[in-house]
Length: 271
Image 1 (cartoon, one colour):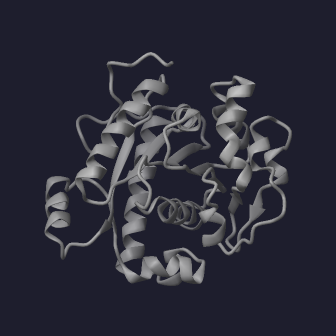
Image 2: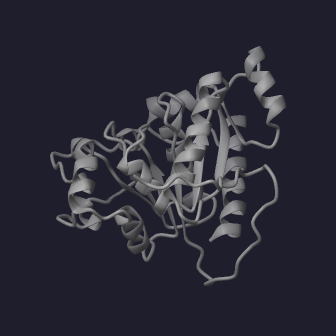
């Protein structure tokens, strides 16, 4: 069992920011979209952030679906193929490049999930490599500027590996007491499993300002980015396209753009 850390990771928008660091001229970064609670808009956020990365920033981007539900591929109109090899990427039986699929958008590829992901914890336990995901993302970074991980809502060896691989952790939080508790769990998960403690960026997701609880949450956390609950965001699943492609001038699209800009600023400080 991992030793519990007494030092908590940074929460973006709270306290002092990390100072920018100098490095190579090419910026790379791994962004994990993670929550221990399901139904919080995690996959929709991951899919739209990947689009922002490719379309707005011009980054060569990989959207890596680590959730067996396979929502990312669906949101981009990619039908599941017969192969059940997504999990074997971790055991080195299959090269990631053999499974990566192009989307209709330049510079945006997807490494889709399949049913084999359900056995991933057993695979990781068998190979005994605590940083296998970090190693894989590092290798893929030679081809991609940004890697967006859509993570399953679980506490497991996979979630621990995500924390070790990520440069930034995005936590979608619909305004509710359970979501507040979920953030506390994620903070502790990062502190327990990530030696360098990637910063956490909470996002108020599915926000409906007509509701008193949602309005209160917004007032209490004015620095947190927002993804509202809107019909145009729901259309992502219907049209199988990101919001920026469906309604680029809509307020919903602008919220995703603002969130992406916040992510880019944070990555410039930590990578």
